[in-house]
Length: 512
Image (cartoon, rainbow, N blue to C red; front, side):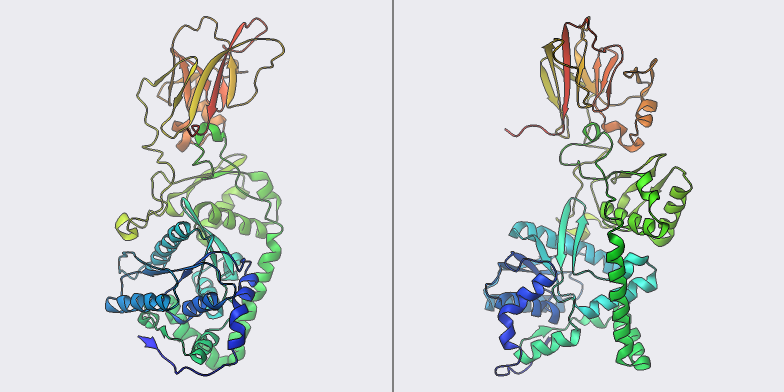
């Protein structure tokens, strides 16, 4: 249902329309000229945001996207029609996207939010926009703070909504910007009312099955009745104080970040290089305990797109601080492995970055990881032949090449884990490339003898879940190179080597 107000003559707000968007954009770190997607629900906040961007001079390139969850029948259709008409009147490109969600209220808010942002990220990419604008305002900020407080959160969670945030959505990344974050809901309504601009009232905003609505219509009015307007004002001041403290603490933990996975060349193609990663235990343990909790929560949130629950984070921290090793399941199918000196963040063992949502719930827009550990790297049991000179392309587009070069004293032997040189003397058997198989043994360069390959990979820091991704180069039955990690000892180049076998591993095939 639309809320309509009579159009007033020149209002006190009219002179600010042309430049107000620029001021709001700069406040949240957004270039006012940048192309933007406006998440348009039809509610007062998103309508005001669209109007501000539309009236700005100069006006940024705008595309409005309405995500229809399909949960309210005719009301959903009416809201979409309202948004389409609003945009048509302003000559603003409009996209309506339908997503299908299980109406079960358990976890509905979270599932809807995940699917909505994934859809918006796709439209932003299509439009060429770097960010999506949402109409979240100060009341949304406070409601989010209270929801997190009551459900349980650590210090960083109490900072509530941020004006600008980068979301990780599996293979997608999305910047969400909230230009109205300092406004009150009533301010939004007053501005639109004075301008005679319509908006839609979402009937689901009255549904007390949802925690946010119970806070909005139950808790906050109770606080205001008991403490007056100062009670609400003090809650907002508390939120701002926590946000300021959180910002200060961030300066002491910002240096902690995920590095590329150990032996990235051995494990990852170029497209998958950024997924997961490793982190040294030492720097994390060197900061105070309170900051350690904050840093680990942030690292896991950045790495997986979802922060762990408080109890689970406590268990991880306890194991870490006692110097123990362990493996911990994380949201969305991720895995954290604590080893003696490092933390390994491993991606889900399936395509979906959102295992709690099936394909029907996300339509055709389900984000996917760039690889499926169990399916993408299938090779024949006997491996692939590698000619010399020649190269092969692995299923994930990594390339292994072989060539013979003249050995001269002026050319030192490569020390790179992805470019090795060996002595091919008496090596008459064809080279082949395959992956780990039961019973494989390896005589590593510098070692006193051979050992089980699985043990070598474990000692090299390769997580168990990723050992099948390491390419192995064989000459007959002899394993001469664990690609990206180490060559074998028996083929070490010496002063008597006349010709060198050069093997290389590239993380992506050259584009032709």
